[in-house]
Image 1 (cartoon, rainbow, N blue to C red):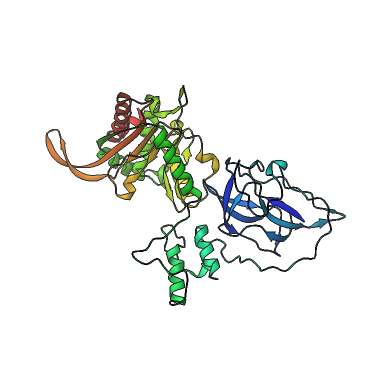
Image 2 (cartoon, one colour):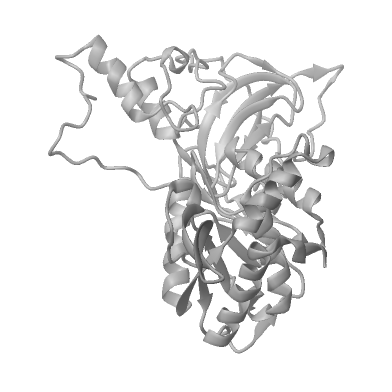
Length: 425
């Protein structure tokens, strides 16, 4: 029997929540077969099996938090001839890392993770007789639900595939599970919906935990300065209608975010102070743009970024935005897309909001909030006309960006929204 420990999936993280098991004790698995999904603070990651064989034991339940290096799954490796199958190299990440000092050990951890770099075989010992244990359910595969919701359903013997999801992105919510419990056992269930006037305690984990830590550190360490500017985006709206009719954009989503992304990428090069990173006694001005797009997903807020956005033409940018947001929505954002950002856009307009004061993404000196575009009365050449108006709100790290740089940056962005022909000048 071989023990596979939870690997570092390449994000530099020390723990993850078990989101879904694809196998149970007694199942036969092949090399590279996906055996589980884990939810880290950054993304949902599939874990493949390093060996072929029969699953002997799962060391964690859905919803459990597991440290990198903890025992994850035991597999009776299939014999090949006289020898067991050779162990496979780790299929994700770079192997386990040492424990974080002071971190509480989890069950099933026989030794420090620093002692191994790949899944290893224990010292030879007599194989005990297999002990029958309750079969862990695999009914939750491919159903969208957060780990606490999965655990609630599992504790009450509910099959998530039979519950109608009402979540914004098609996920089963706690309310959905509680509704089924109430319908089945209205008088006796101990997991009844929270009544009006009562409180519900939610465990902070995964993306929400990481977001809370990041925004707190950002807001308390970087002195924010916020500025606003109203913009006549009528020409942008007309320009987008032209792009939508062009054959090259036939299968690509075109929205005002495209023009804003192009404008921010160009303005960031013109005012590099808004595209910078503060260090203790120095700061870096980035003469390239890795453009972050704040994305509200079923797991919480994440900020993947488009690498070298300043080098892209409009078609490339439109495709990159579409691909990035699609992966974020499906929970398939890659770890590399969540690091190295230099400046961020948050599109609060899709929420119907006109303006906001966003908090900087840690390590960046600028973030732009893009408000809703609405038809409003606007004075043009002394005449009142209906125009498409939006509000740009920018937050900047005042250690690097003064009012003059903030104003210049927003002026450059506004100029392109007012006249998108500048993108090809």
